[in-house]
Length: 273
Image (cartoon, rainbow, N blue to C red; front, side, top):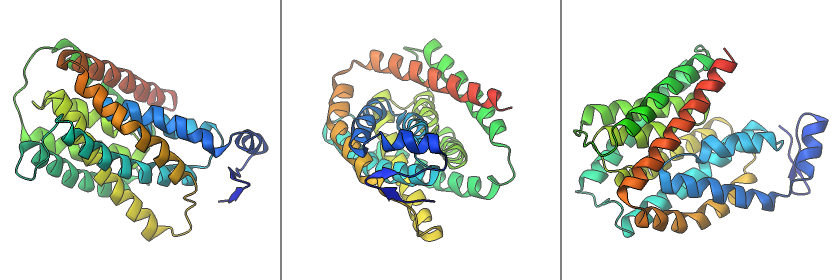
């Protein structure tokens, strides 16, 4: 992996290098702002949208993935705290929301570890197709069930954390749609689900960052502070947007975004099949 020259990433091909040299790192900040705004207000979309954008701009995967995980750790924890203060969620240690977040985080770690073991043998396009089908089905069910109350289920929450983190460990994205949408289908309120996802994903990303530090010490972290700057600035706006958004409209917005992201994952899996 090559380093940075004059604040811009060096890449493998001449075309990619020319593109990245014309792209100042300061412009990464608004990209991170927009992606994190969607993520902190709807519970999904940061890594799913930002990672492919940065790769298209010529950054290398090992410059992007660790930086995205690092920034998601910071913004996820910040978003969870801000959601708690805005009363979108109750994350006091004794609360049900905090227990859901803890269970999701613990089982997410299990999912990440499983994905690392299987990553070398399982075809990634098969995983994308499977996850795409699950998320699309979830989006359709959420839209069809608007206004319907779902019974809370700890078993669904445990399964959800494992599958979502497995997906993130294998493909680098897709955690938010599964966890936010799945919580809603498990009986968790939409605003609570968004905030809980922020906390669980932040803790899951911390595991990923630590893993990178342990396994590969020469990672280029130059992108990380720029991504964190954009993400951190967007969190208060996203949290207060969700707070003011009526519950029904928030449910519709989450359902539509889940459906769109699921369709995108499914199309990518079928394209590479």
